[in-house]
Image 1 (spheres, rainbow, N blue to C red):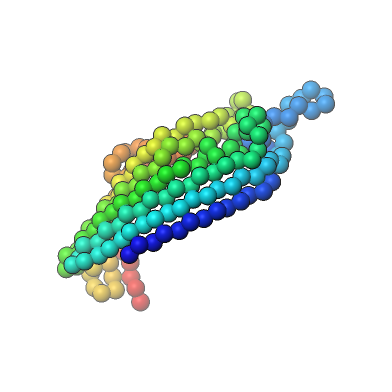
Image 2 (tube, rainbow, N blue to C red):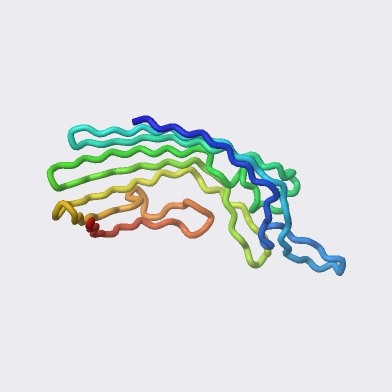
Length: 186
């Protein structure tokens, strides 16, 4: 099966948070963090995906593109970096996966690559949003499942098996996770 989508989104007059809008100097000479309006942005993108299945084997692959253009002037974005959506949006993402079912057992693997982007973290001592480059990254997930009955499935899922810790945002690194589940359908 082939699936394709094209989109365009427009945002007008963005309101920035007080801590991401840059400092304003009051008439008294004191700095103040105030929320303020910014010009909007526009985003265009596309996604194309393929998936198929035969004889217990299944697969999927997709590519997504998202391009953002900010209308706020560059000097203003320099003072208020947290509303710089052009830099904060990863442009490319690729997903590929495969799975196999044998009698009551399922095994599925999924890979996702995302291009680099710039995120921001708030520094309380400077009262400013500081840029952090998030490099491109790959996550690999694995799922094993067993159907106890036609309506009950137990599973074990491991997320991010390729790295124990990974930078995906300016926040705390994402950790590898392993968890079990039980699904019952009625």
